[in-house]
Image 1 (spheres, chains in turn green, yellow):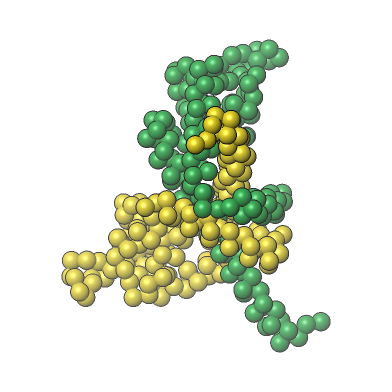
Image 2: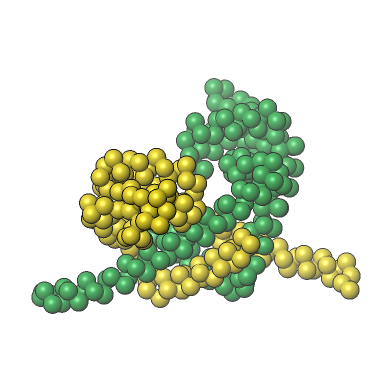
Length: 162
Length: 162
């Protein structure tokens, strides 16, 4: 059984680990905020569009045959209310079509129109290029290592969700 | 000068690098979103407070002698308008004091009150503990490596800002 001195030593050992975890979290937060800020600005200036609008189109691009609004909202981890307005504007702009499901006439399926697919392809290519440019100071092995560690971190976090 | 075949090969080589950068970005985004979601929920349930309120208190805790609203907003990378309301509520709750600057009577200095310091200390300790718990699946060397790579990424991104 640990005596109080051992407990005190254990506490001292845990403090640097807490600080290390905090540094990792601040690093994750600031780097993702820096990228997000830059990406939002470029979507605005180069495509006159917003990041949430791009995110919804990216979710729709995953299912060329169409999906329900519930599927889209689950994928984006946001409520249906938040995306209904975005989808309606995309429909009005001719980038998304809304049809009835063959299996359930009451359910609507949404998908990118042909024009929407072309537009998404352009934005998606530019988006990939921006991210590559933003991280151009990192070597391939560094990016591989970072990707691997982020997967590990996500795995821990995803387990905590349950 | 590269011929078109060389250009085509170069393009092919760049594609995986683009994908790799994109994977890194998605990893950064999802892991920071997972942590942020959890931290917001815990601040709400355990301290009946919000993340922006904690962030403002953390910014104030950096300068025990007080700082201007401009200093706080620059540190938090948000506009003064966004934090004025939060600071006013912190003042009303007795956690922050607003005084005149000795050097410039027109400027206000804000700082944590003694009660605010105690409260911030409690929240900050809990916050560190949550992050450590959330990342408990990572070993110390893995966290060290991740911290180092995130610093490298931030450095690239910070340079892009200028």
